[in-house]
Length: 66
Image (tube, rainbow, N blue to C red):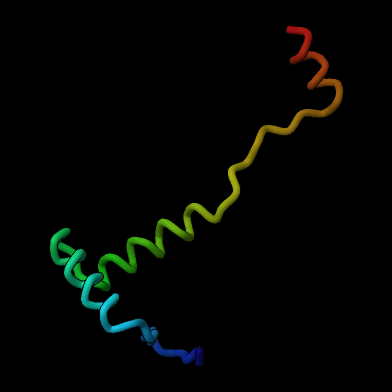
């Protein structure tokens, strides 16, 4: 798929799938752009790996004994 510099995305999907998607989105009160941007935001947010607290060996030993 070509990657242009505009803000447009163009994808091809099966026409039947497109119809089902638009129907489902309409039932949810959404349009394709709203749904897509919401899913993009969720995807990008969830890609970030959660940070875990790091312990040095001494700190870990102290925590384990507590």
